[in-house]
Length: 445
Image (cartoon, rainbow, N blue to C red; front, side, top):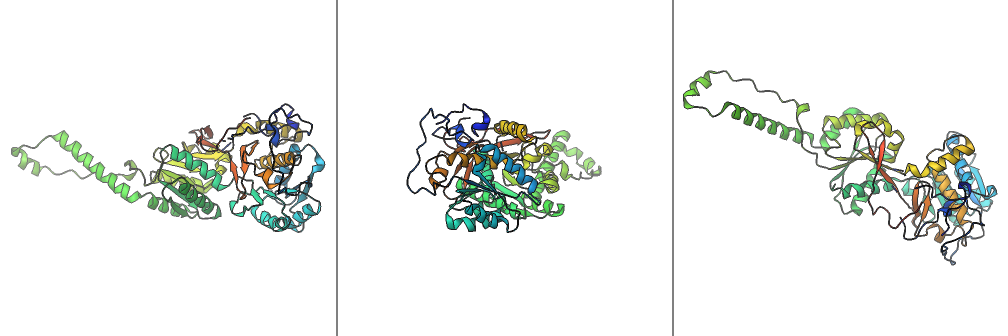
């Protein structure tokens, strides 16, 4: 293993220890860094298979990003992170997916330039186009999309996927005793991807099939469907009966038993009108689930919160869970106090932010983390025997990045070490412990 002994510009992604984030073999922090080739190896070196090597002579790294057009600002922000991770600028071959011909043309140019690996592109659509080009020449692709459905044996999904998020949440919720899962989701592609992730995670964890309900954008549909899935009418009726029984018991106890001589007098006293029970003052029983996955953001999330208050589905009864997207506006989510979301450990990326700002005078976007990690990974592997071979990319003990541990699997999926955050009453998320079995092994920083 290689210990971190050089400055940040030449060392690793494993910075000083987001959304939690473990290995039998210690991950060399320098493995994912722009380390110089003369850096000394003081520990046991990592062995690399020598057979079935994939184009070991191709050392150049292709980077495909939108550098002009609508997403040009984001693309250039991500490009700067990649350059920060590579110690030889000439090793990075950059192509603009927003130019004429799009991602497909950019992929052809990268192949013609002799690139041995392609980092990017940004979207699922562009990744599909690139994969159609690279598949014939067997060049690995590390896509920045978060759409797990486009993963394949030679295309890895480097973004944080819905499955990664939900797997972490379900494990943690199960560990605290939650057994009945449900999801209340927007009726769109993101909501359906979250539903698929929940169904898979519940199955993997041996839990019963979760209840899935999709809603439209308007408040009336949100409220009506949440009432239905939470058994609001039945819970309300039960609460009314309990309230009436309690009032009857209290009245009987206050008046005491009737004497026979008081019968006529009691009959002559006009009866008091029954008090009308106000639903809002009733305390309803728990809904038929103890963990609820949400996926809305913005005004739709506010509508969901309002409906939850009306039907009495609260974090005191149910473990509310949400997507990584919540991390970007967690400060506004005080009304969901106690709810969970997942994200990478923000502490680990602080040194990266500092170095990025020192060089470029601006803050890196969250997606810049992925370009830095992927570029540092490629930069390290190009110096190793086998280069960008499948064996090197999918090493079982994985890699340590600025957002935590990650490992590339042969099927194109990526295992990530995500943290769980609990929303506070004043807004913002507090990082809490994640399940110990989230990722096996140990990890050093």
